[in-house]
Amino acid sequence: MNFLQELNRIVDQYDDSILVMRQQTEQRLPAHQHKKGQLLLVFGGIAYLQTHERDYYIPSNHYIWIPQNYPHNLLYNAQDLHIINIYFPQGSGDEFYTQLGIYPVSKLLSEMLVFSEKWQGNYFEGEWEYEFLHTLQTLLSKEKLKKFSIQLPTTEDERLNSITADLRKRISEPLTLEDTASKFGMSVRSLTRLFQTKLHISFVQYIKMLRVIRAMELMKDTHLTVTELAYEVGYSNISAFSNTFFQLTNMRPSEFKAML
Image: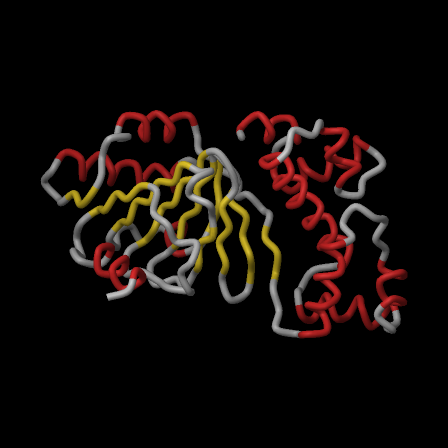
């Protein structure tokens, strides 16, 4: 039995249990899904979740809710992160639990996690730990928190993938729609249409997300100041960098850096 089969066996072994797993390593797994809803909490770095349509970025002190039977692949270095996975059986019909979403860990949720930090394994209805974890799950939809919005759309279009790969390599340089179109032998109109039809996002918005994602990675892996980070990801105006970062993450760069 390979690791993926063993993981699925453990997660889906009991249909009615709540399962707590810590430091689970999924970074080498292909796309897979579980019969239970998955709450994945990230502390100390950045995790990545891939789906067929998008790549999602989960920063420290955030969680992602993955609905039942939702194909996904999680990527992270478990040595750098503290990861908590809690798997829940089908429960509330609240729309919140039918949609994938990334949210900040609130003070209340954090305190509940500290209280249950030693828990591991399956818990069943009738056990007080089960009732506690069920309350934790219910809390998620009641907090009405704003979703973390960094998500890069993906495509199988080879031409566009070549363009986005080039943009990633040159993220510290001035990147314009006109220069990119010229470099790849396209008109501005054609490149604009390509981004809109294949990625459903504008060229400018894609660049903004690339730069903020790169800044988050650098915050985790380097000791650059916010000013140095801004220049490293292609911003000459620190205020513009800070405002864009806040627009996409609901945090200032200094706030995000402090969480790592």
